[in-house]
Image 1 (tube, helix red, strand yellow):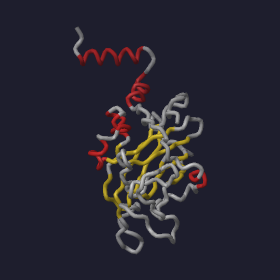
Image 2 (image 1 turned 90 degrees about the horizontal axis):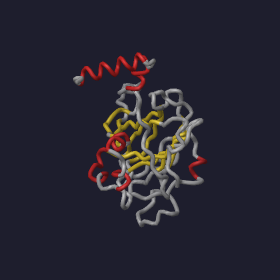
Image 3 (image 1 turned 45 degrees about the vertical axis):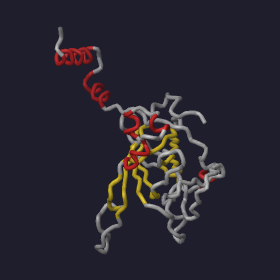
Image 4 (image 1 turned 180 degrees about the vertical axis):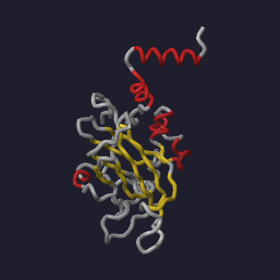
Length: 237
C-alpha cells in the first residue's frame, strides 16, 4: 500500500512523465473558480445606467455641487481577473444598489421607504490593463427580505456577461438569513463577502500640504470570470 506522501510523489512523477510538466502543475494549483452568478433581479436600472459616464464613480452625490447622500460612505476597490489570475482589460463593470433607507430608484420598487434624491444609485466603470476598478458609495440599507448587498454586471470582450452580488462581512447576521446568499456554496459565499477596514482614500496618508488624507471604510472585491467557452456565466432573467 502507498502512504499518502508516496502516493502524492507517484502522482506528481506520473504527471511529469505524461507531459504535464512542473509549469502546468503550478498553473493548475493557481487556478481560481469563477465568481458565483446571480440573477439581475427586478431593479436593474434600464435605460438609465446605459447613459452613465464611465468616470463618474462617486455615487454619494449627483455632481460636485449637489448635497451628499445620507448614510455611511464606503470605498469599494476591486479587480477583474480570469481563472489564471490574469487581470482583464476593458471590462465594463456596472453596479447598482439601494440607498441608505433600503430603497431602489426604480419604478418596480413599491416599498414605502423614501428615495434619497442626492444618491446616484448606479455607476459604470471600465477596467484598465491592471483589471482594477473602484467606486465611492454608501453602505446600502436593508431592502425588505434581503441582506445589504451591491449588484454587479460585468461585460468583458469575447466573454459571456457575469451578473453577481457583493455582500458585507459586517452583516453576517442578516447574510445567514438571506435565501439568495445561503443558496451559494460555502466557498462561493466567502468569495463574494467583503470585509471593510478604515483606510486613507489616496495612495499616501497625507496630501501635498501635509494634511491627513480622508479615510473611509474600504473593501476589496475580487471578481473571477470564467472561460470564454462558458455559456453559463450568468443566469437568465
